[in-house]
Length: 343
Image (cartoon, rainbow, N blue to C red):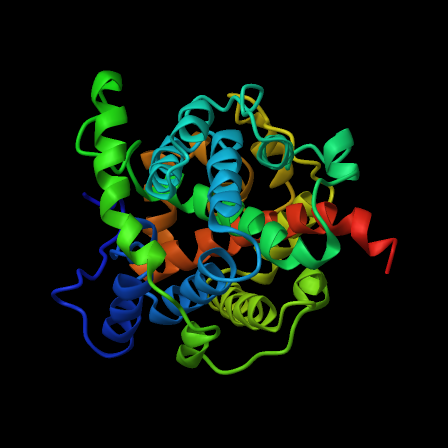
């Protein structure tokens, strides 16, 4: 499957750090899928994404079916059909066929198991910080690092996938074929799901990093905390490398006041948000802000305007990763708020 706008490294062509990471992804995830490989032109970013993913989604105390429900529901909330297909496929791999069918349409109301239904409803509400279920979450404090971690991870991944990939990982987008294709693919990935995994294996690719205060919700799980800390420091370094201070401050100020709302189809909100930037930075500011808040509004023309100033693949990938993760961290803060008051 083609990755849009940037070049990526195939498993066959990989060497060095990328080859090492790909080998572990193939072993523990089951295949080097495009949401990972799209990060490969920046090897440290690939390492950070993999560390946050593996230590949060693939292992831990929270069952994998709950994590895949969160991934599927968050992806529906973010209007990311690729990730909805991918993670309802993973639910099929676990044997949760009915739940997968419901979440393919973003519907939790028919899920029979009360715990799974509540988790799905919570995940579908993660962009609504004042909703009752977000203010009173259906899980315990010991589950916080993994459950909020998966939600934050997919609020990041959905944006990157929407920007760089097509609408489905399946070979056909025809509705009548999807159910069969998902079950076949689920069978393939079920083998890696059953394979035992050791904690912390993904953390060897990057140096240990101090946990930022805005990731404090990870603190009760050392492996989740280390994975997200590594990911966060890579993201910060990319933002400083590829984006002017004024762009980062403009985008961060908008995100700090954002409450999860979709801006609709008009792009006037982004014009207004970057109005005080110097003209030379406005196109980049709009692109990064749209990638963070409404990636479905990003079009080829805006990408090309950015590439006129920053022609390298790494600049585009790094800038959009920075914006996407800033928005995901903002969501993590309000998802953790009900627990922070009890500590």
